[in-house]
Length: 231
Length: 231
DNA sequence: GTTTTAAATGACTTATGGTCAGTTATAGAC
DNA sequence: GTCTATAACTGACCATAAGTCATTTAAAAC
Image (cartoon, rainbow over all chains, first blue to last red; front, side, top):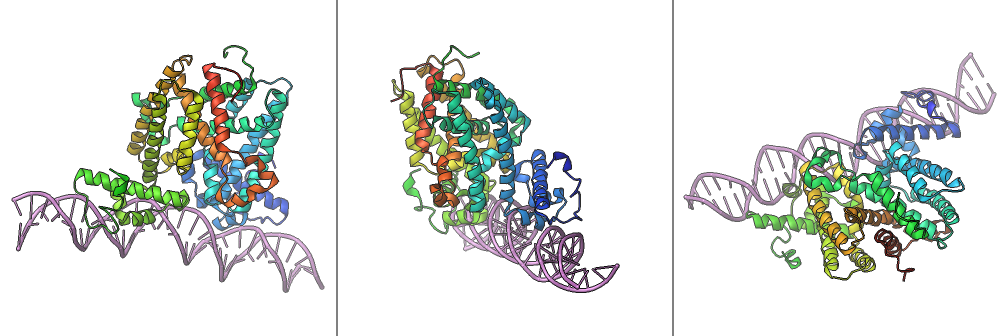
């Protein structure tokens, strides 16, 4: 279960077979880990199952013993990352006195530490639509839904001025804004050099700053805590 | 240039060739029109160039005389739709006394009238990264960037309390929120029937309402016009 | 009517997701 | 320790669809 296990047991070409359920789980996990590596080195477009299998020290067919489709692998990676974000978020929200700025800072730090997160998040809806079985899609949404409810409820406790149900609504809006703002502001690789052009200046936005501002606006307005101008 | 021209000149199997620049433009446009039709009937995943060519009454190779890749066709469709949205928006913003609720209502109405818009918008960043030439990508971003600047500036005129440059920032945040919120709230086709389940209730969000609330929150906070509670 | 051009074509190449008959590591029986 | 049954694993193979290009042919130029 530790990150250090990468390549210790199922390294390179496989000799050991995963027979026990826990070994199967570990094998599945090793595929997810290989996928993360791959996504950190190349964009999603270049993510091929052949390459993934090679990285994981398996044959292509073996990947399909653990996942139904290419997209289900990507969804598994995304789900794992998303849980990581929610864990981080819940830890911050557990402290008695948190304000929206602290939360925003935490999210911002997470995004910086996990650059593969936003591309996956942005593609999530597309994947679900395109090539993912109904069971896998349902399982994913159920788990994520439950966590959203939990965090939304916590928000309503922290900010009592929120109306019933408004916590999760704002949470969704915030999450959506994060994804959407990234899509607009992050230049695709092929335009990296063109971003200096004067007519491209508009898109030279500091995502963290912009997101921070917008999130504070959104939540301060909703919680009616207008304690003066921003710091 | 009229919508009625569909199928009048270049109907079915082509006999007439596009030699003049204006005819080439019209042919290109007819491909875009066929693409829109296709996207309204099936999801993006099922969008094949072969099928597109057939719909447009052309051979596959011909499509590649007018577009570099499949994704460049999709980008062209998206750009066209986006211009439509911006036109609508600018028309509303032209009237002297507009408030953010009116603008929100306009956007909401547009989204309802053009259901193919949000899926394309959500996929835009992914397309740009994946399979679009640098020139096409640059051209797209330049035009869209210019329009964003224009509308952002108009916003700053309408809401003088906005700081310099804040108009376009909020505009981007709003646009992003719209895309992101859709991605979360819109259930993929394979889960349509599962949305009744109690653990899926969380995602039974009314996008229009949610978006409306969040947009009003965001802009009212930014413009410091807290004239009481929402209507 | 003949020549020249380039728009249009569609068979072909290539890349990749997904399958499945066959191979072989491993558990369990004896 | 040996044999057998099971199923994890493999990779050649299939199917599909994006993209190419030699050839065809509409139509402009003369």
